[in-house]
Length: 412
Image (cartoon, rainbow, N blue to C red; front, side, top):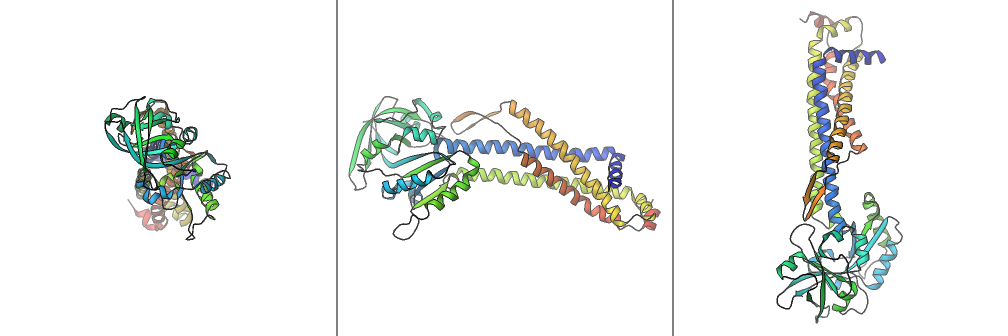
């Protein structure tokens, strides 16, 4: 085998220009795919981070049926105090859960005493909400990122539309579960930018103020947002939490709790899937480039070395040995292209990392792109390239091994 490898490598260097062009094409293909995967992955995780760390959390738990009617924020589908305690006990059994925030949500009217519009209220404990959503403070464009009793954080859309500033007195009015109406005056403590653009009507109160407006005698929870210490364990934690809560059934024998990852709650998950799909098709293009390049080179090698093949066949070289010779040449081209491509990709990604390439996402400006090459991506692309190189060399190798020595020697 070692002799075959030496002969195969020697044959590649006999045709230096062709070998250089082919290996360069493979290397450039590998480089572009790895750079695209690194950049796209950086953008994807940055986008996901903006959504999960400033608004949704990694996981959310609701009462069954709440998500289906979430636009109306139904008070009848809140978790009771006992159910909330059961959920909190289950969360405490999962060490990967770093923080969680209980929210009491309802729709209401927001007034500056002159004009009135609708608003979505999130009653939360400020410290829990910030621990669960570490990017939440970055959304505060005016005022402080604290949620105190008697204060309200309002969306920028409402602040601009009703000409309300930090320190203004406003009123929040809501319809309670029994149909009665209640309102309360608050001081604007801060103004929030929306995560995804200029829209958004979510305001934030202290959860005890929310309970007072809704005239609740005991705690009720609309949803619980959860943050994990390791985002990569998202689906594992989701499955474990569902299992822990599965014994809790309602009167119809159906699960009380509805556990969902951010993927099932945000339309931005579709954008993340599109990025993955583009990456997949880019890899397919690489496979096609390598396949055509290697096959073209190996076919030309067989055509140019017909008499040589006839000679080694005439002296007794077995067809399997001839076939192996050409397969090793294809393998060597794949390895060479993959190694050079990985080195080039590492250099390009390093340049991009220190160049501080920035872009905007929603209202967030100056987000710095931080592409990183993953070892598993480099290995996967390299293995694909090498396998495709061998496969591409298979047909020319079979053709060479089947040549009749006499006919090959007659070739001019």
